[in-house]
Image 1: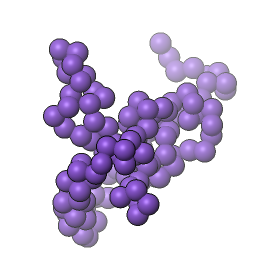
Image 2 (image 1 turned 120 degrees about the horizontal axis):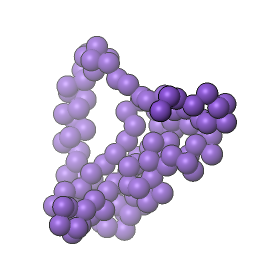
Image 3 (image 1 turned 135 degrees about the vertical axis):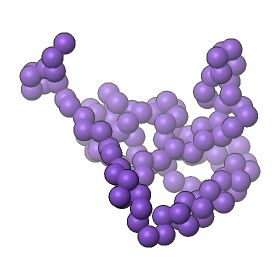
Length: 116
C-alpha cells in the first residue's frame, strides 16, 4: 500500500545515529563510565526504582524489570533494563504524538540526586 498523502496522517521521522557520530572522542570511556554505574542503579531500593519506571511508554523509557515476558509467558526477572533516547531528552512536546506513540515520544527519565 503506498504511503498516505492525507495531511491529517502524522509522519514520524526515525532517530538515526551515524557511525561517524559514534566515533566521537571519548565515547568508549563515556560508555564504560555509564556501564560501571549500572550495578548502582540495579541495587537501588525498589521504591526508588519505581519512580524511574514509565508504564505509559510500555517501559521503553526509564527503568524496566520483570515487565518483558519470556516465550513461556513468565516475566523476565533475570535482567533489568534502563532505556533512554541518546539524542533528545524529549523527542517532542506534541501531546497528541506522545499519547499516540508513547513508546517513541516519551521523555527520558534520569536518576538524579533526589532519588539516587
